[in-house]
Image (tube, rainbow over all chains, first blue to last red; front, top):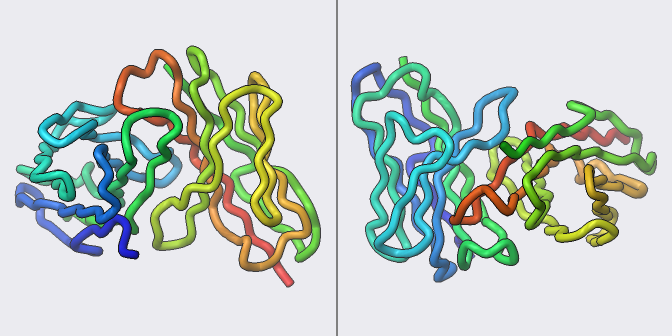
Length: 114
Length: 113
């Protein structure tokens, strides 16, 4: 079972370039999430989609946009990349938004912005 | 604002040497506390959810417990394959919708032969 698949796994960008990170899940989950993980900080929520057709801001949404393309796919876009956005980005999904429905993560995209 | 503090930051154990990891939390009414395991270069892997003080859950050599202020992840007779970073996260009643989690920074566990 693939679970949550993220592409690409690694990417290097120059400041000001744009980029879309892709995420797809095959678990028929309704809810999807984007996090960033930085050294010395916990995972921080960027955006989430509680269900197909809805998206909401998380803790650190500035500089990002998202698209819930369909039930399976949730993409994260950096319109004008900045060095502060160098991070590891994780996508996650869950059956729903209830506390009884844990989030399952992909293996991340490692993004460096020069 | 929900907060999660994990200690120690790093822990080195000999194989078979049992120990505990700590997760202290401040939350506006706890809906759930989650434990994840993260291997290098991988995403977090779900281990447990705890919902109320006094609850315990076990999986192989791991046992998670919960009080009103903290959770412990007890590792009994660890093996080298238990080496990983263990993450704790909470969901509070007032964090709004969307199953939003607040994560700690993790405890990096190394089990040596």
